[in-house]
Every structure is written in C-alpha cells, then in structure tokens.
Length: 324
Image (cartoon, rainbow, N blue to C red; front, side, top):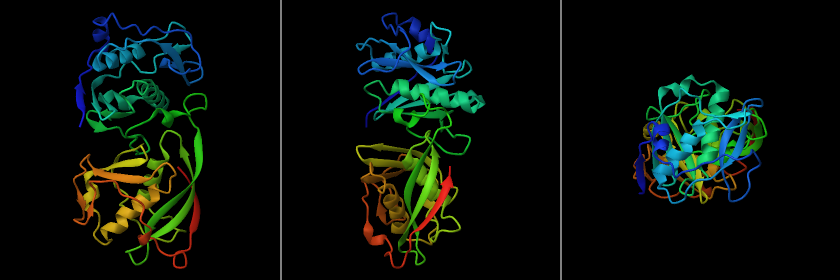
C-alpha cells in the first residue's frame, strides 16, 4: 500500500522556500486540454472560475501540493475573482493513500456557511485532481471524516462530483431512477423497488443509493430495512468499475434477524444496478479483512447475485418519488 504522510503546515511560508515553482496566473478562460488550472471564486456570481497556472513537474509531490495550495490562498490579479479558501481555514496535514489525497482541516471548517463550504471544497477537488498522482480528494476535520449539514459524508470526491458548481449554479439537482433492494418478508430474499429521486450534484449517485438503503423502505413500498438508519458511511468511490464502500465499525453489529447474505446482496445488487458499477468492495473503517457475521468474506470484490432476488410473481415492483 502506497502511503505518504505529507505535513503541509504554514503553506505560505513553505512557498517562500520554493522560488522555482511558478504557478503564474494568466487570464480567466475555459479549461483546455493539457493545461493546469487553479480554481478561484467569482465574487459576483458565486461560481468557480479556472485560471491557468504552470508548475514545475520536477518538484517532488509534497512540494507541488504545497505550492498549489499556497497559490490557491492568493487572490487573482483581477478583482473579479478571489481565493475560494477563507482565511480562517487551516490545513493540519495531508496524506496520499493510493491516489486518494486526504486533507485534514482545523475545526474552523465548520464555521463556513454552505456557499463558502461548497465552493471551497469544489475548488480544492477540481484543482488537485489535475495532479497525475491524485484521482480523488477526501476531507477530514480534526482527523474525523467531514460531515455535511444534512448528515452525509462526502468521502473521496472526484472532479466530476462538482459539475454543478462551474456554470450550473449551486442548487443544481439531478433526477434519476434507481433500483433498490430491501429484505423480503421471509428475510432470506431481497425485494426490488424502483424510485424516482432528485439528488444534489454535490454527491455521487452511488452515495445516494446507499443513503436510500440506510433510510429504508417508504411506507408505500414493500420490504424491510437491511441497514440501520444510524449506519455510518465513511466514503464511497468508484474506480475501474469497482464501487468501494467504507462503512463505520457499527456495520459489524447489524441486527442478527436477517441473514448476512440478505444484507450484503441488498447492498451489492442495488449498487450494481448503476451502469458504471460492475462489482462492490466493502470495507469497515478501511479494513478489508472482514468476515461479515462470520459468513461473507469481504476481502474481495462482490458481484451481483440474482439468486437472492424474489421472483417477480412474489414481489411486485413498487415505485415512489423522493427528493433528497
């Protein structure tokens, strides 16, 4: 496992030691292939704007991260855009873990209003995922996963998770039809339910599906919960068709009234209904060496299993609409 601890305290002072790194801002323009962009905040429209920059590829990874973050702290030369990172926000450290760059921020992070928070998070993710070693970016606050006001944990984020922030407005929502599986009446089968949902573009469809599973069936839907409503979800990300789901340790203490396979394949079959997902890798607090309920081996990806789905004759599909 490739893991490097990157201490990035007092980044502006670090930049002073890196005169060879010139992230020179040029005019604001639409992103073009092959260029590197710093994302700033437009003071008039509450959107992000990319400003082309250049950095020295010969610098080590830690120095590049330090330089980019420090440059993001600066306001652009034009008065129309400023840093998307508020002055009170301090970064405590950063860690690169298998192409996932984890930033740990001070507790002042939670003092941001929702617009400041969204724009800062989007600017950092969209900027740093341009670095070749970085595929996703994750936020933590005082070593704990970032929790958004609605109670969700964004986990590892991709640039595409924030398509709404650039040019589409902060309140953009996506409409989608998702297929969910809950426990059938017997408990040893799962029952198919279709929902029309409206969800914020700030989260992925995979995370939304898991949130729907955690919320459980609606009154008009047939089926029984497979996860507790208090289930902690640390992160969700998709790489090479594998949906990586990291639950909190409370996942291991699920009620024993359902068989392990019912719970696991309700999750797996729900996620693999998403076209981009071919298999699911479940971890618990980043630990993959787990036998769920001493029955299901979670050390390898799990694939869709139709054997646990109730037959259509016994399980009429129910449809509902819900806004997230």
